[in-house]
Image (cartoon, rainbow, N blue to C red; front, top):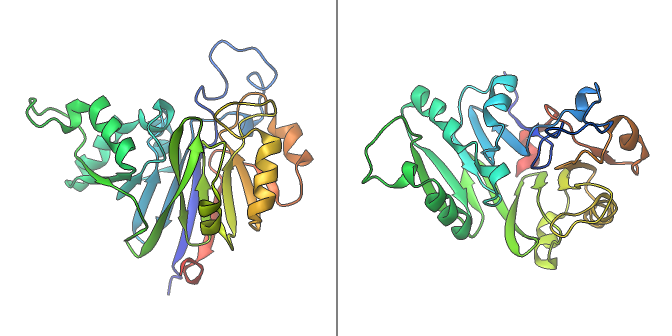
Length: 263
């Protein structure tokens, strides 16, 4: 009998430009190290026959083909910035296979912005063409979906609020520069924390790596991965310089957890 597991895959670990950055000739952008080639940030939760996507990154098509993802059953959005949303049109390929709409979850403001920015998808008064079939579900509290409890984790990303998500032993917290105490209370006892750690120098909307290390040590998950990495970060050099239990994420990285750990 197959044992049910919860799997998380890092589909993309890069910042909004992707790495290599267009036109850049820095050592990281010219590197042949596979972990320095980063698509835009997103992740996939797989449990039983269900796949839950976190964000539709600009590089969604490339990520789906690379990981051989055959279906998406729901999407959870962290916020409405382009690098986390603008792959939305590629969801239509999954509609063709499934013949059913895909539910989208996120904060009321995030989904309102998505509805406005992609009105051709949601404005049913316009002529119907080859568009994704999607349903918007504003989220303000934890929900049960496909046997999983998805807990939104409010965070600050500069002047806007973003959501991270906790699912059982895993928390995915990209695009943030502050996490309020009420959200930290929701992050106790983690096996795996995936956390924003843009670069070494300061930034006004993202944790830099020293700040991310400090936050990771406060949350105290058994394992932390830093994601949304810029071309300041060289995996071949900087990963081994991080504290024990903290590492740099890379595209295609995955972890499995037994079903009992999600309760």
